[in-house]
Length: 112
Length: 114
Image 1 (spheres, rainbow over the protein chains, first blue to last red):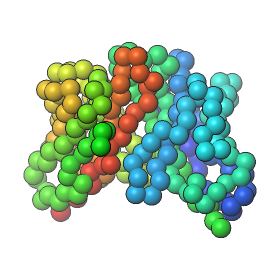
Image 2 (image 1 turned 180 degrees about the horizontal axis):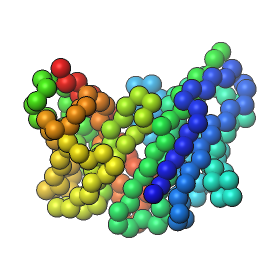
Image 3 (image 1 turned 60 degrees about the vertical axis):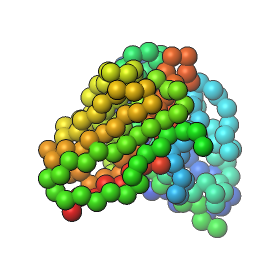
Image 4 (image 1 turned 180 degrees about the vertical axis):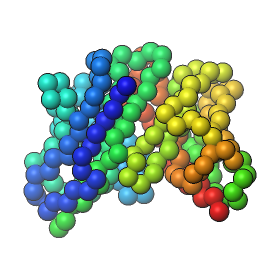
């Protein structure tokens, strides 16, 4: 079974402060990890995925297989980062029975 | 405007009635998904379909039914057997073969059962 845990329902930081949204997973095979974001009144969209190893909107996330974690980080939070963030997991290879399992989400609020 | 279209955006129904939510995509994606989003619960998978005329149950399929007669369409029926149908429903699609694995989401349908 695949499971994603986001321990914080709510996270509040001030503008310019570092932010880290935690994500832990359990999966017996080789996982592929994603972060999705949902801004107010917008549809859910992909923020980044671990295999691309890129920084999107200043966010980065490193897959730590030893700790089974995929925390999302940004050194200086901006007010426009306020949104609901979901960590998600799937099996590394596509093919049949591809399922994306989501965590319960963390609502990030960046205060001015 | 290409993408995934869900309708209706808002729907009210009386208890005991079946309701069908529409999901259409013009992305030529092979796979389509239905998720339910509840506060504090995240997204939970209801049904998914990898190809036309085939679909699989997700984690919370009880009380729901789907069909996949056309590649671009994946309607979800919320039946009277669903004990707690009031929720926000999200449809998504994925290119599958050769794709990046990214899911593309619709804007959602909010169902309220009175």
